[in-house]
Amino acid sequence: MDSMAQQIMEALMIMVLGMGLVFIFLTILIGVVNLVAWKCAPKPSLAPLAEASEAQVSRFPGVDPKMVAVITAAVHQYRAKA
Image 1 (cartoon, one colour):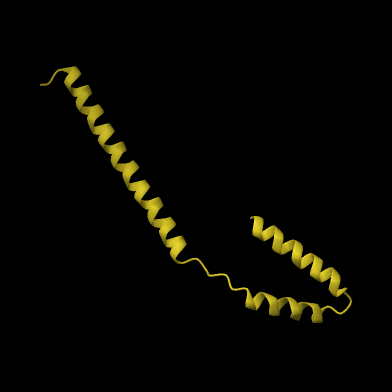
Image 2 (cartoon, rainbow, N blue to C red):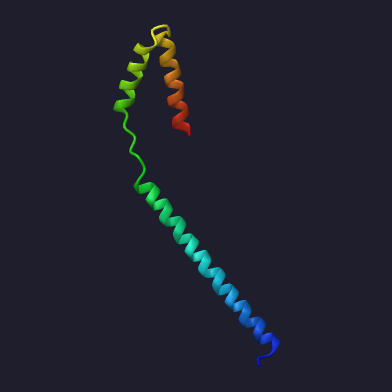
């Protein structure tokens, strides 16, 4: 039978090994998730947005087109900062 100090040292070594393996696994998992998110992210296309804005202006004839342009510019600027 091992002494108490040897058993405690062995337990600490097993604990450190387990914590290290979990840390490495979680680090790899985060890296893979970020890689998949970057790889599968939708590509922004600006052409359909311009057509959609024109369609919305004609759909609401009671709204001033200048006001729509101001709101559209403000939304675009807000999204560019975020």
